[in-house]
Image (cartoon, rainbow, N blue to C red; front, side, top):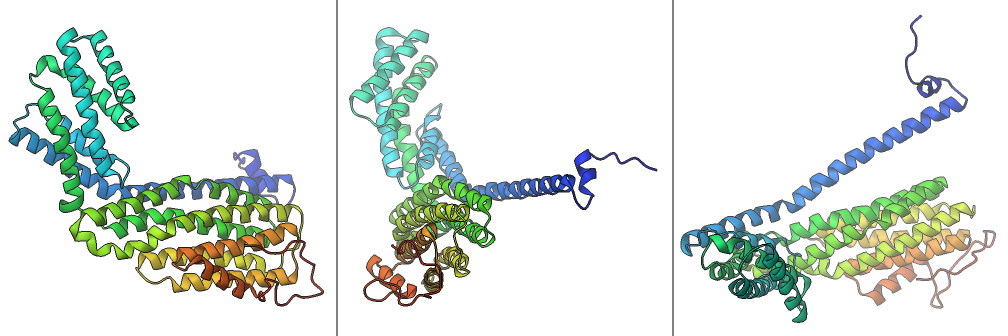
Length: 417
């Protein structure tokens, strides 16, 4: 009879009962989670590549043009700083390229001034390099310069000191190169190769909105199954949203810049309004959803009643977020997203009427507040959004629920928000 050479916990996993079977299930679950995480990581990396592709092409074109013009037209024998300046401008925070270009030029001016002056008096060498860099940094800080200018001044001073012995009159072409590189970067982004601002925003918005929708869905399932660990995982994941929100905010600023600089994109200005006004309420929806999930964890821990409509309400919120992204991307009025937000509030009203505990009442309140945030993100004024939420919840004019099952478990706190 052949010997089973598998690991012990896998051999025990073939049995129908006993602790070995539970070991096998746990290992299988962990392996499945690892495979899912690996796929998600690959998907995220490919998404980042697609998002950065346009910027990479712009940077390559700007660097090549800057080198060509500096070398051929300006007769610069070492056209190093022009492409560096072009790439530095494009690599700056999107939406701040005008500012970045000015900072590059000012930083180069300071570096050239300090480097040229000190080389004239003390010559070149290791200690002279240290002195030049220190002086450039201190002078920049004394003048109240930004961090970018300080770094640029120090880097330029290093180039001046290290390259001056082999290249005469280096300071003049370097200074001109700063203007040239920054100007070409702006020319590429505005005229030669302007990106589609809506496409940029859509790609940046997807990770943030998908993160919110996925964790709300996970919370809905966890509440339905009373799975505290699953709800806690959703909470931890949602808290890791700074990168997604920062990318969305930066993309919005970059889209505004593109629609301002590029004549070919001027007609997109009106379409950018939705996203520009939605950034803040989406951020609030993230924070309020975090509170919702945190209280859902406590609700499960305390074994509070979970009315059947409660997880449905949370699930409708998740779907509202997805619809908002889809309708924004298509340039449509987000009617379906609004309807789904109000349906979430309606289900929350039913859950409240059936009876909830303290943490459950907070979950209901956060459903209302998050739905209001999503309505505002869709383009509705805050006051109107609050009115629609109260109406969908079933409140009367005094703010009390219109009807409640008297036999249900009484709520221990009123819904707010």
